Length: 329
Image (cartoon, rainbow, N blue to C red; front, side, top):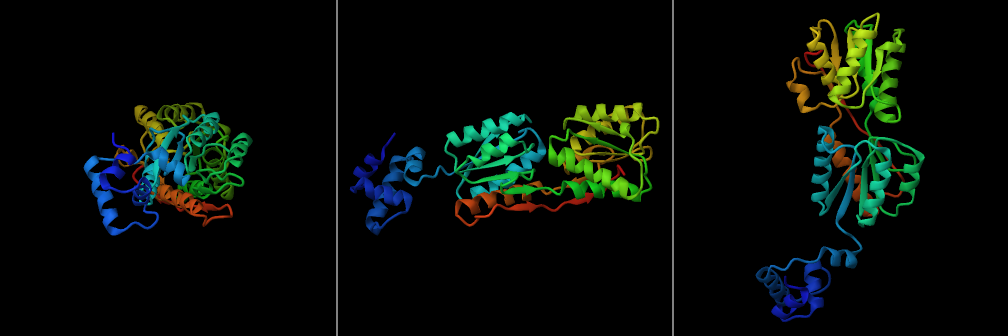
């Protein structure tokens, strides 16, 4: 493989001149620049990424930490991140936590050791160990999905979207509304969406029975099992069910159909996520669109602003949402 020394020899210039041409840094005559460019093409020379990092103190890589690689939400967010960063000359390096909080910290340390220029975390918790790990970083950092103290954060409007879904059910005449959530250690999805549901019920003086609230773990199967518990344990059966993710809502739909419980005439159903699958199940699932690709782009923009020194104060950006009503309500 040719080296920068070989290119300099072919072009009849110094290695410093070749470096200036490759990095577009410093004066080089038009004639010499043309000879270097031609030599690079003829020899198929590829500049060393490591050498470039040593010179510029930048790797051109942003680390992205995902809770799960396989989800559609993560895929859409990553598309938005990658599109924005690629347009500005950056690549991404993906890592996966498999929804394990301790792996968020491990992956932050791993990415730092790989000398990435910044880190984006799709966060699932807000524990103190995580905050201390982030505070020890000396590179740009943005969290998406959770509001982290002292950290630039991009958050969904989890509370109001859940409040609006519940109010939508109530406006249709439902008073017995079941809820499928996740553990409250996930502050955004577990706590805020549940609080939105509870506050909407309280606003209309509607009771919430303990058996109407079930937890899942984001999976289709957990949604199925939560719906089973809702419908088989409750003395007063819900006439509507709100699941905090589309995957769990679709799992619940599977249980309802399997047991000849008609949606929506027997039980109305709502999810969150605007997944592609939500459009294609029968009946099509009502859902909340969080505009995940836009979220990814906004998060990437905040990292880029930090890299260029435009951001000094920590920011919190709250994103918009829209309710999509389909035939499940």
